[in-house]
Image (tube, each protein chain N blue to C red):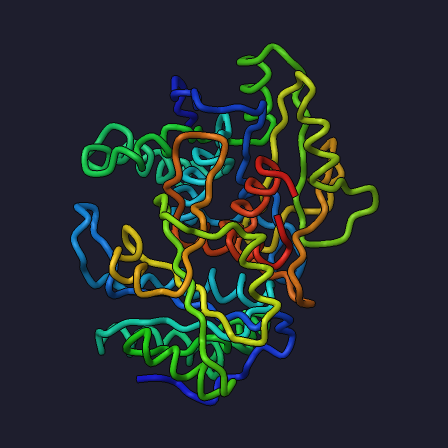
Length: 197
Length: 197
């Protein structure tokens, strides 16, 4: 299902990749599920990834029909009529690669960079030992490629978060409410990471 | 068309309001147009507004059918089945008020606060005299209510921007590309304004 030979973001200044996870994530009852693709997530997160110099954006779904849909969207904007009408959107969507599992995404980065990959979880919940943005920025100075994971639906499962090498602090506003869309959360995290806090 | 008596965000810590403008905005040929409502903009920007303690969120559209649609979405989530299923979404959507014009939104804030309202434009383009986030944060310490405007489609028209009291610096990433969705841009701006840069 993966669409290889995508253009790597030449403007990328950090060794940072993004993964949008559709399995395993939580439903609103905190049960692990696989979620359906929301195509606007692909657009918004690709455009933010391009803006903030991300090297590649993996859309991770184990469902074949969802992977077909994701690749149809990508094709339309990178090779079809969409890219002619909107070349900026073409550039952004070229960053996307669809994989069946997160491991496949990590292995792809490993192959491209010949380096071990550091995985970073994001969550709206407090996690013991989670990193501040400043701490992550320090780690990004290393040679190792990093991949930051965003969970669709009600977020990444605890098991997935535990399996990641690092976890980032949640995004807090000024209120006791942090129910951001994954599109908003990813945009804010990338801005914070690239531009500093 | 406006849905008055919405709950004001009690968690709001700044005297800041948000307006999502559907007219006058630019099309991709830089001609002034009115844009169609994208309902996910309402959800994403309402959730970000709630997270960052925004006092109210105005969806501005001159088109009656679009205003009806916007109010149907709000009703579903605040008074219909949506709010029962997802109370967090209910709280966010309660922040929204639909107005026909930006002036109507400004007058509503003026009525609520009995203070003159300062309008702030956002744009992806360089603008002479635009403010940094730090400069805006300084101004927000004043008593005056401020309303930050986000343009749909290809952004606010130059005339609209000129008519605003203030303009904010564009969002830059690490790359020579800043084609963010209005959902991403609004989320990043609110995070920067509330949490500082």
